[in-house]
Image (cartoon, rainbow, N blue to C red; front, side, top):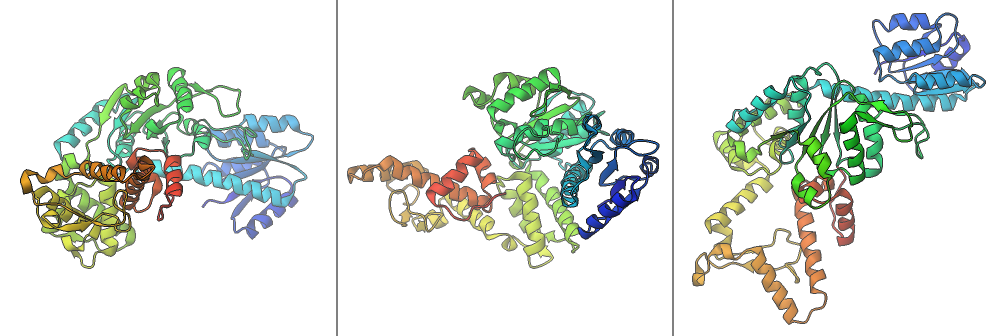
Length: 509
């Protein structure tokens, strides 16, 4: 982390701030005038700048202007006198993070500097993520079509809508579109609209002014301002709240927006790339997504294939992720045996590339030898594949044998935990595929209704929802936000259902 710069002609103020920040284990560098700080800006930059407003020679406002021209995201705290209200207003208009009024309380000053530091580190992490653009790997014909589309779109500023299943690599495509565009030297800012609580999403997108709401102790730039001149990637756009869709439409229409609590219109010179795993046409018909926003986003649509549609890419992706994981952990790269690779290629992998990457991380840490066999893979994969194969072929566990329900501690519909018996395929002229879960549900419902059990709908409905959520949580390793996305329900909905149904093992992503 870079040091905090203190610029003040008053040696006592520099000394007090230096000592207070040293107690917080924060490095500092001090200057007695703005000219020296401007000269130092030519070769470096602080994490946070604290500057007096009135000094001999160049003023703090001139220093603020120089800093913002070179480092627009760097938080600057201006020190001013109580009587100098006009200067404080000028500081905010110039983009200051906050101001300290003399005489100031040192503890409050340190707290303010810490808030500015958090903002600075957040901005730095965004810039680093933008710079680290991973490769897109793929030799399958479906991926070659994607590469050709990226090439055609690279020199354009047109809005792009990327569709595809969760984990298929939509953000990588968005980053590639930015990297090969005329905006490549400007920021790439990504925001997952499904991961931000509704109450905070507007502020995340458009920023807010100081005092706009409880806790807004300082003005803050939103993602549109951070992406100025560059690209803003809005992931999971289908989950955006309806009222915010109106504000987004307005920005896309005329290029202007307001911060939350602000009255000054701001210009957005931003290329928007949106992505979703949902069927937006269906959400438009349901009234959950604005039709005019859909048409504004759907200028160019780019569909990303699932991993099931490009199985020939699984070996090269696996080798890439194994090498990447080994490098991160500082260990030797593990190698998949031919049988293990064939097994991986045969898997459905509903989590797509993200699931494969997570699996490779697991293999690097957990697989016992350097050469990985199929038996070394996670049991849920090998057991799940054996079960799926037996169902498809009518052999094994379903061939006239009893097996427990997937959640052994969960009852079958309406009753106690029990095994379900399936006849041989073709027994009594009934093929195996006719004994599906709908048939079982019909049988159970008929039994409960015949027995006169009350509230059959509620009893079966709760068990149905409980089973779905438990299985989704199992597939996402307990991450309830991922489970909500997989089930196609909202984050608040799954949280409420988990509480109502008494489901254990869920955790926040």
